[in-house]
Length: 120
Image (cartoon, rainbow, N blue to C red; front, side, top):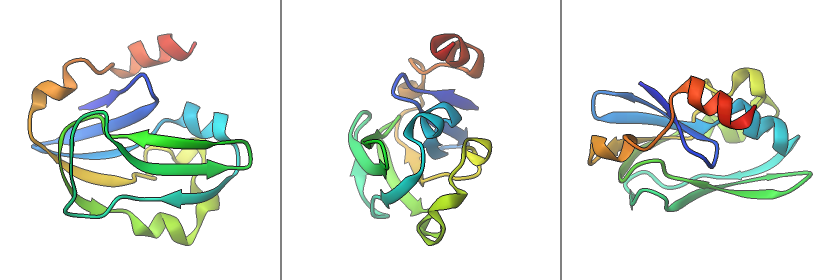
């Protein structure tokens, strides 16, 4: 189940764990990414907490958790090649996995068509 936040994060929930990343639109708006700070596995977060930072040649952007829970895994492979973070690969370039405490956190998020309408 793929859902989006108004801040351009996405979460793809499978069971009680979701992969989290930023949308193709957000990557396009940021431009060339020069630095990424990821959270640590084992960290507990609340929905809306700032958990990561993306810096580009244009701006720095906080990345917020779309759900509350425990971060179970971090995609450190992203740090090896920041040029791989492109709009076309946005859904492959997940940032972290989170064990979601309450699926109700996702009720307010948008599906893909609603998200596309928001950015359109």
